[in-house]
Image (cartoon, rainbow, N blue to C red; front, side):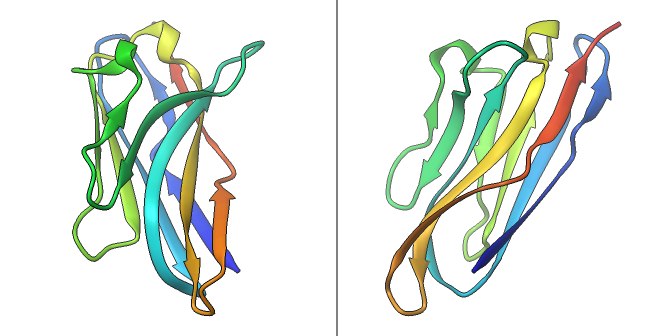
Amino acid sequence: QVQLVESGGGLVQPGESLVLSCKASGNILTINTMGWYRQAPGKERELVATTTIGESPNYADSLKGRFTISRPNGENTVYLQMNSLIPEDTAVYYCLVRGRYMDFRDFGYWGQGTQVTVSS
C-alpha cells in the first residue's frame, strides 16, 4: 500500500499565495508521476499540473504562469506553489501519484484532498 499525506490548504485572500505538498510513503519501488487535480463545487475534477520523470511538467493552460509544480530529486514529495490566487481557484485539491510497488506492479492513488478557499 501507499500512503499520501497532503498539506498546505487553507483560506487566503485574493492575490495571496499558498504552497501545497503531498508526501507519498509505503511499499514503493518508484513513483513516475506526481501531480495535482482540483474539483470546485458543482464541477468535474480537472487537471492542475503533473510532473513525470524525464518529461517537462504539464500544466492546465489557464494556470500557466501562476502555479508551479516541483518534485525535489530523490523525494516522493510534490509541491504546488500557487501565486496570485483568485476566487476561481477555490476547490478541493487532490494529489495523484502513479508508480510501481516493490513487486513491480503498477499503482495509482489519489490523496484525500485539501481545501483551498480564496475569498476576501
